[in-house]
Image (cartoon, rainbow, N blue to C red; front, side, top):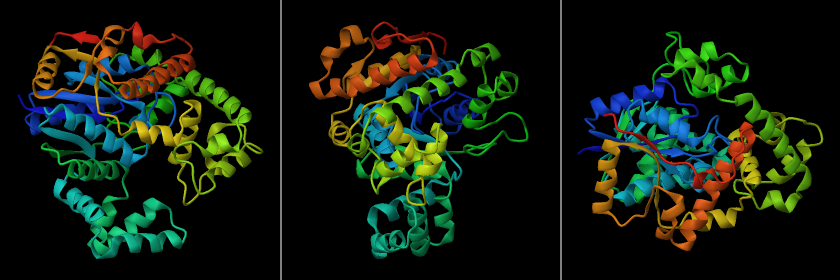
Length: 403
């Protein structure tokens, strides 16, 4: 067995994701593919377009063999914590041979050079970074410029693209955690992150698909996904956006500055910016636009607002991120069963397939980690308009015996 791992959100699953899984299977010579996927809430901040079991099933039908949940405490974090948590889970399994990720740069050595520079901090890169931050640059821009000063403009250009940034964080995490598995980069095809579709009408960004669905244009979105249009029509994207916005505005109205200040991702006066934005803005994106700045990107504001909805506190989440990893299974086929057997034989990592009976395997702190995922699932179902309380306890994992 050669096991490839993929870290994903599939919000929603589309042709680019299927392409990635196919290339991983063929070019990386993977016999089995394991996916670690965000649950009810995603990293950009806010609920996913459909429940985690539906998304896991889509992946299972299009190349994945085992789909497990990336806990909210990592899935809702910035790139570094997102990568650190996901890699820690894969490393604890003691079964992964290769981590496959999509990126704008498919040259792993170039990605590794940037990751090494950020880990080793040669030639006082930290001091250079601090100097650019003092000049008023945002962290991403300052880091990009500091890397350019040390390694040259070609290396700095790598940090201009979002998937490259995440790829660099994966490689950093692998190095820090002394992982035995290797990195494999698949070049991103078609439309770039957060842009519209590519000219060939095969590949599209997930955001463009979500935008189409919000406008009720499932026919256009159908060009870019490997499943029936009816499945797209069943994704209540507009309802989720409206319901989430109303609930979040209510939370913002009811809370005070100390509540916002205690959230993860809140610093540099962001709590004041968010509260002041409420005076002029009636929609979440307006609040995000007003509260963001050169130093505070929109993605960070969205994540902070999602943490408010989830009632997350920075101190608590940071403590939970130190918990020993466990594996929560959402979907698998027969090859997925083989992966589970291998993990059980090589690791003492707890594996959950049924929350009604498996929770005894978890320590008290691991159970606290799980409560965030249960809450995220509950909220996602509430915003979708089909509320089902604690569905995690009643929903069976997705099984597909086809290989």
